[in-house]
Length: 114
Length: 115
Image (cartoon, each protein chain N blue to C red):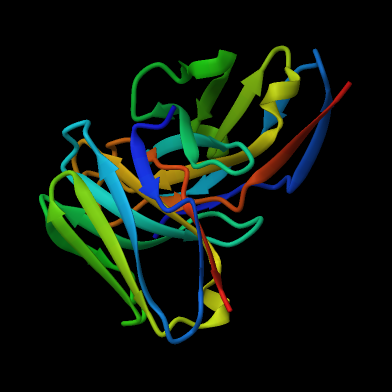
C-alpha cells in the first residue's frame, strides 16, 4: 500500500477541458513533487514544493498549474492540454526538500488527452 | 553536473538465478545514490540508498548494492530472483553540494524473469 494517494487513477480529457489531479500524504512530509512519466521512460521532474512554497519549476508549460493548499495536499490543475501531454503523472513526497531525503511515490494518474 | 547511466535496457533472468543491474554515474565527488523499482501500473518504490560509509548497502526485498568509487558504479544485486521481481529498475543520483537541484534518474532497466 502506498502512503501517497493520488486521484483519479485514470483521466481522459479533451484539449479544451479543465481538470485537476490531486495528491495527499499524511506522513508529515514537508516536500511534495510532481513528475511526468512517459511509457518506458524515467520520471521527469515538473515541480517541487518545499514547506508549501514552490521551490523548483522545471520550465513546465503554463497549461500545467500546481497548487499546494497545505502541507498534506498537492494539486495539479490542467487546462488546454495537448495530446503529447498524455502520460502517467506521479506525485511524491519527502520528509524534507533536501536531495538526500528519499522520495515516496503515489501510484500515479494515467492521463489521456484526446 | 551529475549524470547517471544504466547500460542495460532489458535483462532477462531465470527464476532463482542471481541478478546484477549496472549503474554508472558521473560526478566530481561522492553523490547520493538511490535505486528505485517500479512495478507495472504503480509508482516508484525506494529499494536502497547510499550517502556515505559502508560501501555495501542492504535494501528491501533482499536487494543490495555496492558503491565502487574507482569505477563510478553503484550496481544492484540479488542472489536469487523471484518472479515478482519483474519490474523496471531506476538508478538515481543526487548532488550533495548543489542546493536546489533534484535527483537525476537513469533511463531504467527492464527486468524480465523466466520460469
